[in-house]
Amino acid sequence: MVPSRVRTGRWVAAARAAQRRPRVDSLGQPPSPESASTRAALYVHWPYCEKRCSYCNFNKYIPRGVEEGTVRNCLVTEARTLLQLSGVQRIESVFFGGGTPSLASPHTVAAVLEAVAQEVYLPADSEVTLEANPTSAPGPRLAAFGAAGVNRLSIGLQSLDDTELQLLGRTHSASDALRTLAEARLLFPGRVSVDLMLGLPAQKVEPWLQQLQKLLYHCDDHLSLYQLTLERGTSLFAQVQQGTLPAPDPDLAAEMYQEGRTVLRDAGFRQYEVSNFARNGALSTHNWTYWQCGQYLGIGPGAHGRFVPQGTGGHTREARIQTLEPDNWMKEVMLFGHGTRKCVPLGKLELLEEVLAMGLRTDVGVTHQHWQQFEPQLTLWDVFGASKEVEELLAQGLLLLDYRGLRCSWEGLAVLDSLLLTLLPQLQEAWQHRPPSPVSGG
Image (cartoon, rainbow, N blue to C red; front, side, top):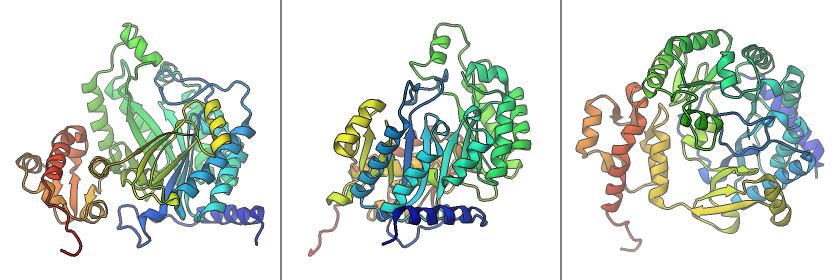
């Protein structure tokens, strides 16, 4: 038997060699014959941050005397436990999110990847993404993450305006962000994503578009545009409620989004999802799993997952949430091997609603072949083909229903939430009136 340390060394070496090969954009193509039940993505949550940003209500904590070795051991233990529980044989992608996972040591990242590679098949060219903040990711540290197996970075840039960055409570400046971005592109060419926020209080369209144009001179092949959501319990929410800051203007935010996506399209970016843009095939494999309702495992405090527990003979997909608070999560992992706090079986209609809502976020939409993997009896034509309301959306050029499947047009993608107000009730009604499933033997 090959010692685990040697075997993992081979995987890291193979993964680094795979980084040098050209990437092929195969997303949106029909899935491989290998059953979807044997494949999954893995999300790893690192819950610690240097400070809490003014807009953020994610599950994150400011570390005070954190023993990283203990956190690392618990992540490894939970990864092994959930991989065995899921019964999956192959992990397609790994995403280290947070929090600020670039505050973790590269050794922690390597330990998790090592555990995964020992339990299941982790292809050498699997996408392994790390979220990074500019102030916690200098060049040598990024190189160390690359040596640990990371091959893609997602940088929380958010803005190129120092005043806006201060408003958001970010610890970096615009120059910090651009320096980190340049270092990241040297280390991970073609595999660096950046986030840019829009719809901030008092933000104007033209200055924001100038930021986007400037970013196009510096960015790599993937960019995400996110509209600010004021979350209750955050500092920014309180400031708007108290009148210290003006409320964001939704009409201006909509204009920024529309203008921004046009600028990106003209720059050669494919809008492959509502908020995500890529060129040269640099789509996010991991996030594509979410939008295609593939299985994913979530490890770490507050992580979410959706998978069928085949390892214990289960046949129904479950939505799982891990214990939120890190200390309690670690206690549970040490006691039980995992810290799953909540586990809810997903009904068939509930799963179809997710397939529809998530699939329509992409430019591919929901293909007939994809839909049939989840519902072989009731077709997309059965659900939407005779609906007057859907017919109106088709006539307005917001939706397309054809031999490929159901998808949004360019115009429809910008108003998806309003389209779902028609489509989801239509699905629910069709489900209630579906013919009974055929019974074998008569």
